[in-house]
Length: 235
Ligand code: C5P
Image (cartoon, rainbow, N blue to C red):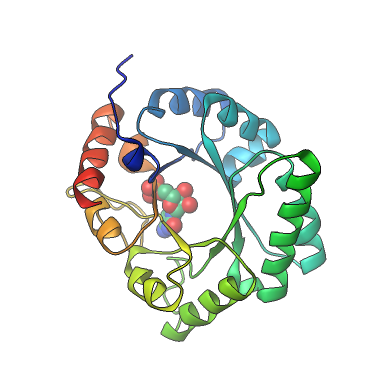
């Protein structure tokens, strides 16, 4: 297998979206892409199929696991679920900021509690700001939700590249995690507000979430190398 020497400051900025429903397939993809990606994103699809086992599989491969479950419920329920997730060894967990400050704070507390009981480093809460599918969202919503994230002590946000300027202005202390990444010439699929790796990094993205630009490519290694080279130039 080809193991290119990807600089750590590039690899640490790249998260691989494992949007499949089969852990064997996801595991194979994870092993193949490890030279370029430091973070493995396990979403609703894979977690529904394999549950916590999916987390362990990628931690064992050497990834930081980003559990993209987009929690949203009453604060007590979110807090209790977060406590369980905090004990799994994940590094990032997404929570809908539309749930409000109390719910976000319950997630932060629950993750801290679960992690400390298991002797682990607490995962970072990433507040999902405005879904790219929500085309009707007023401009003020992003600012309001960034305020919730800061107030509740979240470590970061998930936002579109087009929202990065606002994030840098309102809450520069938050890690900005950005999906919808499409290198020049790669189809957008269902991504509403795509950006190139260079644009996203230049605009302040901390971590780029890469899915189909690599996973749907006929040459995933080459696609990943091209993205890594573009990121290396932009940072
Ligand atoms: O499009 P790609 O395969 O790169 O998707 C990577 C991630 O982007 C997905 O796992 C999903 O969480 C997110 N996504 C998004 N908005 C969309 C479609 C996908 O934020 N419209």
